[in-house]
Image 1 (cartoon, rainbow, N blue to C red):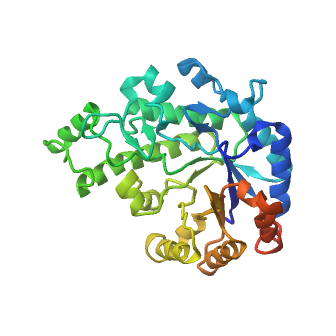
Image 2: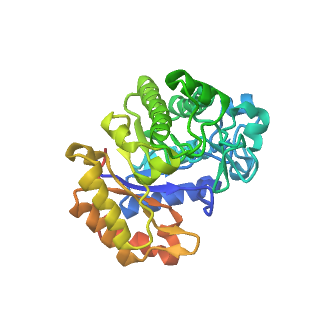
Length: 354
């Protein structure tokens, strides 16, 4: 399956702020040769679609800032505009098990403090400014699955996507009472205080793999054609830091598409990660599910046209048929320079439908 994809954010981007900007973006992507978009639908403890579940549990139906309080539903608008020009839509649940950023848990943990993930000191689990719900807790897992299934049931989506925060948990977590008791029941001892102890690391990663197995099963039970897509951190760093064992995910067939975030700032670093994927992580048949994440822009960094085209060329050389770009606005800068480079180069033939 050839994936020519791009993430659409609500940070550093105004695409989702009006139907007009959505329609223009979808037209641009179709003309540039893309075939799938990954719009954000869950971040900062709010949804970018009208969620009855969030309304009932937390009193906030949708991200007011993006919807502009005008009764809009950005996801519904985007699906209609994307499908009209032949693009598939796979909503991206960006925050996953994270609930807030530098807000001490925000709205979610103020309402449900027992959902908090804890570190070995018994404090709220915080990593790089993000505060976390306890992804090992059944109630939290049910909440996230229900959010995703709400989208699957109510919208004409082509897939759903998790990323480096779902299924994921900082490996410093897992020291809440429930998780510790579960570990003691299985092993008859307290979990190690060293959070990267190999066995303790794998035990917690396996719980998250079990969550993904359940998510996959429940999505397919509702709409078998809806794809389950994941964009984890690169292995093995992602396992050590965020308990993401994507080798197990692909070996157990728990996803349809996978986009490891190979966010490197020069071609040779990117090439090294691609070589690891192909040579040691993915078997031949599994490579058909693989389309790596490529970083176009973040902060002051911008990829050059040359490095972008070399990265795509190397993907094809190694038998990888697609890629997903982070993020849309990078295509449009400097009079659409990167978009034009794709349109004239590797994406000049029409995007395959799937």
